[in-house]
Figure 1 (cartoon, rainbow over the protein chains, first blue to last red):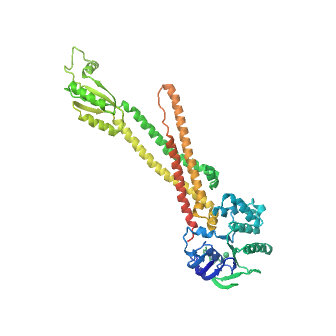
Figure 2: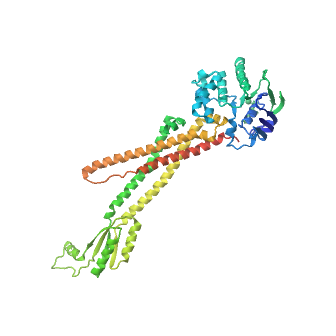
Figure 3: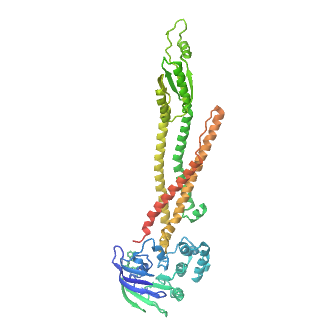
Length: 220
Length: 292
Ligand SMILES: Nc1ncnc2c1ncn2[C@@H]1O[C@H](COP(=O)(O)OP(=O)(O)O)[C@@H](O)[C@H]1O
Ligand SMILES: [Mg+2]
C-alpha cells in the first residue's frame, strides 16, 4: 500500500533529514516509526502524506507515484489520511464542534450529514459533552483526543500519528494508545511516530531511524 | 446569497462597514463628475436652438434664387427653424437708429443684403459643418456666419472632461484594487493557521479561496450600494433645492439623474473591482502555503 524506494529528503540549507529509505507497509498494518528526536520520524510521516516531497527516490501510494504528483492532485492524496500532528494544530478561535466539522467541509460532505458525523467522532474519543467548548479550555489529553477525532471524522483508511503521548502521563497515554489499537482492529492502517519504545502485545512492525538512516526494520 | 456570503466570509462587521465607506466614497467621486458633465451636456443641447447661422445673400440675387435657397433650407433635417429678413425692411430701421431721416439721406442706396437666420437643431460639430458645406455650395450666397463657436468649445471641453473622468476612474480603480487587496491579505494573515491546517488535511485552493472571495464580493456589493445610494440622495437633495428656487424665480431647470442602468453599472463595476482585487491578493498570499 505504501512503498518507499531509496528515498532521500533534504530540507533547504540542511543536511539530509532522511537518506536512502526503503520499506513497505501493507494495508491493515500497525507500524511504529521510532528513534531519537531529530532522527527524521516526522519527516517520514510528512512524505507519506504528501506534505513534503522527496529530494530523490520514489514513494508509491496505492499504486501511484506520489513523489511526482501534480500539485492540483495533492489535496486528494492528503484526504486519504487521518493526520494527528505533534502540535495538534487545533483552531483556537473555533469550538470543538467546528474544529471537527472542518475536515468534513473540506471533503465536501453533505451539509445534512455533518452534524451526525461530528458528534459520532466526538463520542468515539469521549468528548461529546464538550462539543460547545473552546479547545483552550480542554486539558492536554482532551486536546489530543480532539485532534484524533478530527483525524478520524472522515473515516480514513490510514492514520498517521506524530508523537501522540509526548507530554501525557502514563494513564492518559495508555488511553490514547488504546484508541489507536481500536481503530487498528477495525482494519485501519495505523502509523505512529514516537521516540519512546512502544510496549504492546499487538502484532506490529517497527521502523527504527537514527540521524536520517533507517537502521532496522523489525516484525515483518 | 448575501447572507450566506456574509456568514462564510471571514470579514468582521467593523472592517466590512469601513470598506463599504472607503469603496463607496471612492466611487462617488467619478460618478458625481460624470453626472455633472452629463448635465452640462444636456444644458448645451438645450441652448442649441439659441445658436444661429446667418446667411447673407448677394446683392443682386433674384427672387427665384432666393426662393430656391428657401426650398433647400426647408429640406434640411438639421435645421430647426429659419426666418428671412428683407433688406428693405431693415434699412429704414437702421437709418432711424443711426439718426438719419428722409430729408438727409446719408446714403442714397441701401447697402444691406437680404439674410436668412437659421436655428439648427443640433450641436454636433460634424453635422453643423456638414450643413455649412451644403450652404457654401448654394448659389446666390455671399457670406455665412456661424454663431456656434462657443458651443463647439463647450463640447470639446466636455469631451476633455469625460476623458479626465475616465483617467481618474482608472486611477481610483487601481487605488481601490490596492486597498481591497491589502485588506484581504490582512484577513488571510489573521487566518493563516486555519489556511495552513486546511491545506495539510486536503483542502483545495478553491476551498481556501472561497471565504475570502466572498469577503471581496461583499465589499464590492456594499461599496457599490453605498455609492449608488449616496449619489441618489445627492440628486434628490439638489433637485429639491432647485424646485424651491424655481418657485421663487419661475425658471425651469432640474438635474438629470443617472439611469437605472448607470446605477447598476456603478454597483457591478464595484463588485468586479473588489472580486478581481481579492482574487489577485488571495493568489499572492497562497503562494507561500505551497510545498516546494
Ligand atoms: N521544515 C524544516 N526545515 C528544515 N529542516 C527541518 C525541517 N523539518 C525538520 N528539519 C530537520 O530535519 C531533521 C529531522 O527532523 P524531524 O523529521 O522533525 O525529526 P523527528 O520527528 O524524528 O524529531 C532535523 O534535523 C530537523 O532539524
Ligand atoms: Mg517529530
